[in-house]
Length: 81
Length: 202
Image (tube, rainbow over all chains, first blue to last red; front, side):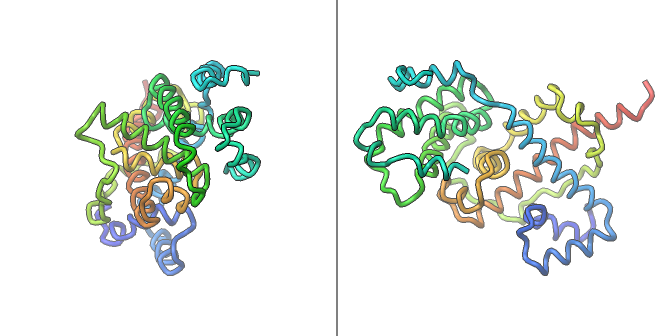
């Protein structure tokens, strides 16, 4: 990551993986990626980082006990099914 | 995300203190609020406290909800503020809701160039890996953490996130970028080591 252009593009990678980057910058990144393995690795691992956090969190839900204690605290016990 | 649910809630009924409507509001939003709190605080007990405090506040202040933002946005804002207040009590030196938005110039270049994407799924999703994911998340400043959670874990749009946090869309993008790059860096340190372990004969 000492390459001048890599440093410049770094701040745009987040928007690049979201597909929201403006066209000219997007094009510049893709041209750069064709010749820069390091940046490709950064993009791949950046995407993977986001998807790992997302997937891992979807498995974490409030348990039925947490749900019932919430309804009790709110004096909505009669809606516990 | 919750638009369909939200349409089915009656603000008039809520304001009139209709308990069945209160219960429906809880059903619609409690999982979102719980996960948000869990990821902000990293601890199920604290998350449950924030979950309860959020809904108590929501019901107490329903009459001040002016309907200019979505009900969901308003509820999430209360939840984020509860979580930030909790963190501020715990680590006052670290938390400010009005943290200045750091600029790109302050961006830390990634130093770790290791392609760990090829690690098998069971290693990426192991309980040890999960502990490292949580640890990396808790090392983020709360202002960055909130943006990352709302955008990448809870799936809100840039605009919705900016409304919940009351910051500009540009600030959301900048903070998200910083959060993602920092987390990538921390995960690369961990998964990079796993990669070396796999390659070296034991």
